[in-house]
Length: 528
Image (tube, rainbow, N blue to C red; front, side):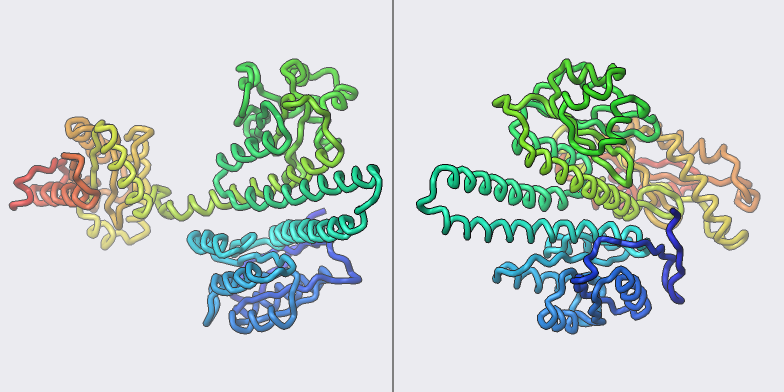
């Protein structure tokens, strides 16, 4: 069923309403919303009240802390940008209190803007459990609240079981071996829940996808004493699953496995989206050649990772160290862990998208100045180790102001976009192209000396000069041209600012000597 759409009040973004449907109507959870934007506050309050939450609202950090101390909410939604005490300080204050006192775990979800990447990281460091980026769909908010509530309930379950263990320890003194065995089983369950909680906290904090998958495999192997494991990732474009990462003694034939989306093994997990032992799967499918390869290579358990109703991937477990069978509680833990991983994968993807936006120039789709400086420093450090060479080009569009003044800024923007495409098509795959600012561009050339850089620079100049640009007839010579300054790393002590200065001096010399030229840096340019 399609979710109902509703437009927020004036100044707000489009949001989509969807039911959370996980709360107990007899004992509704109490949610504290700290948001200084009144329209957003009212929309959130109305939406969550419709989901049978009890809502407390605050418009400042100070008021939020007062209500937190007085009302003891079950969950907190807090905006980072607040008047007075910021949302980050509110999170820190609450978590500091939790560290000093034995209190009920209260999930905190941060509300932030798209470009606040540092705030997101700081929020996690201060103790936030999740975040949501404006503008957002209520569908996403619903999923994040579900995740937070699941973790809260897991924590409460752990505390309850811990209390049960303490009470049981008081009663088992003097009892027979049967009661002692029961106590041992209870300890196993508590340990399993505690370990699961710690694992979920660790994985939920990993925002880099490759690290998340690698860490998950490593953790599962240790937690369940598995000799080898690998992860098959869904490739939606290719409509198949393939081995993404592995640990332990995995045969090469397994590494090269590809599983079509219509394979009977995939169909099995669409019907049974839970961890399954290989012998259970064998009872229902016999036509999958991939399944038989997995079986022949001692895969004993397969756990699907589901995301939004689709198979995101499969975790495949090899033999256990002691060849012991999986207990039911372990299978339940693996199922819970797979759900946690699916949420962590979604978070990692969202973070990657936000990070990409922060390093991209919106108009040209090139890397921006911030990314340029970061990569230039990295390449200089790499060259200090390898001494393989490093060069830098800085380009400037000739008479660009004349173009803007005559045809307008939109026409100028189209020229910059087309020029960006020419740059990307001309350079090598490992070269870094960035918009330096205005009509200036920079190209970092790893492992390229001065001679090679000059050859590429001249090729860029010619390609741009020969390209057809709309409105180029207003330019001198009726064509769009660029001037290029080149500088190469001279020694291991040279820093980024010096290299940029050298390229700038060379660019200035190209401009002064008539434009539409490539000039390499030389020491005499400093004297001039």
